[in-house]
Image (cartoon, rainbow, N blue to C red; front, side, top):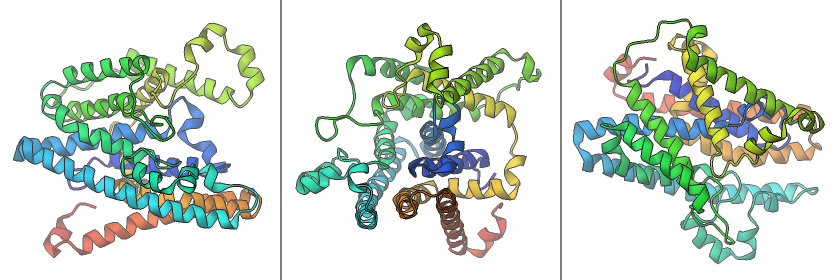
Length: 377
C-alpha cells in the first residue's frame, strides 16, 4: 500500500493508460497485444470501472469524516478540474493535429480526428466544446468521467449503506437506456460515443466493488477449480477471446459461428456498453482478482512503473492523447514502417512513464522532510 492506496488498482489503471495510447495510434503493432484483441471489452471498461472504484473509495471516506456537503463540494471541485483540463486538452490536441496534418501528405488527419466541425463552423464548435457536445477522436473519456462524477453525489450516501439497492437502480437504467434511446446530444444531431446513461452502470459497479472490498468477509479457501463462479467466468473470458481472435479470419468465423449465436452477440455496441462487453470485463476482472489476490507482485520494477502511471492517471492520460497524433505523424513519414511504429509506441510509453516519475519526484520534494521519510514507497 502507498498512503492507503491499493497498488493493484494503480497498476491496472496504468496498464489501461498504456493500452489506450497504443490503441489510439493507427496500425500500431503493439496495439495487437492490448485487451481489445482478446475479448469483447477493452481498456475503456478498465478505465471507467476503476474510476468508479477509486472515486467511491476516496469520497466515501470524506463523507464519513467530513459529512455529505463537504463530500459533494470536493466531488464538484474534482469535476470542475476535469472540465478545465478537458477544454485545455482539446485546444492543445487541435494544435498538434493541425501541425501533424501539415507534415503528412497522404492522409487528412484533421478529418480522421473529427475536427472538420471546427474548420467549417469554428464559432459553433467552440460553443459545442464548452457544452461537451464537440468531442473529436481521443476526447471521449474525460467528458464521460465528468458526467459520471457529477452524478456521484446523488448515489454516494445510499451506495455506502445499501450498495445493492443502488446497483439495482443503476442496472434498470442501463437496461432501459438503449431501448428508450436515452443518451446525451452531440454535434450534427449525433449522440455521445460513450453513452453515460449506460456506462454509469459500470461506474456504479466499480463503486460497489470498493464498498465490498472495504468490508470484512470470510475468504473462500476452496481451490479455484472447485469454485463454480470462477470456472464460469474463466470459461466465458476464454470463449470471448477465441471469438475475438476469429475476427481476424472472417471466413473461418462465419463458417464456424452458429447463426443463433451470431444473432445473440452482434452487434456489440461500445456506445451503449453491450451486455456481452460488460460481462466479458466483469468475468476478466473476477478471474484476475482471484488469480492475483495479494499485492506482492506489484513490488517488482516493471509493475512499479505502471503503478506510478496509475497514481497520476489524469496527467498521463492527457499526455497519451497528445502523443498519439504525433506518433501517427512520425509513422506516416516513413509509410508506416514497422520499426518506426514500434519505436514511436515505445517512445510514447517512456515519455508517459517519465512524466509519472517526474510528478512523483516533484510531489515528494514538496512534502515536509518528516513526511518523506515515513512515506511507504
